[in-house]
Length: 172
Image 1 (cartoon, rainbow, N blue to C red):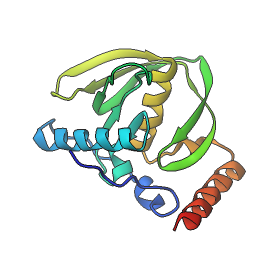
Image 2 (tube, rainbow, N blue to C red):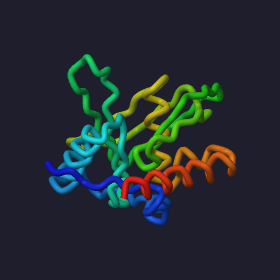
Image 3 (cartoon, rainbow, N blue to C red):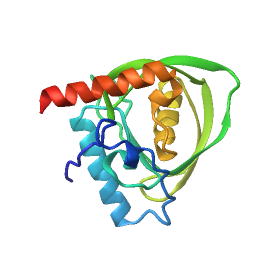
Image 4 (cartoon, one colour):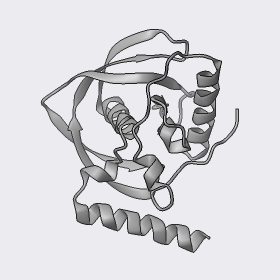
């Protein structure tokens, strides 16, 4: 496995705004991508990562929602789709590895039903709620070229991008 560079809004907005293409099949190349993404996500550290965030416009997501005091529980999602979303919504404070150190509340459906292929290409259908529902919707937004800051007001979005640019300049 190898670490990949996580794209950020200060320098890579055009790539992050791309819509990701479906994966034809879960083969060894896709599994290598998922392994690399998982290592990259853990090193960041984060709880979810979409392939576009490492510059690969494919419909692939990795996630691990295990609490810090428990063993890792990696999850893999290829070509995920939401089959149903509840009318009930819930605000949740979100952050993003592509928008470092920015956090804000985003209102999303509280429950979703999703379908995807797992690490081995097996078709899975399951329900998600709470953090799992929020995280899968956040990561699936990435596959459609949407960042969590796109759910905020224009003022908050512009301020967030400005803050990331300023922090990147200070680190350079």
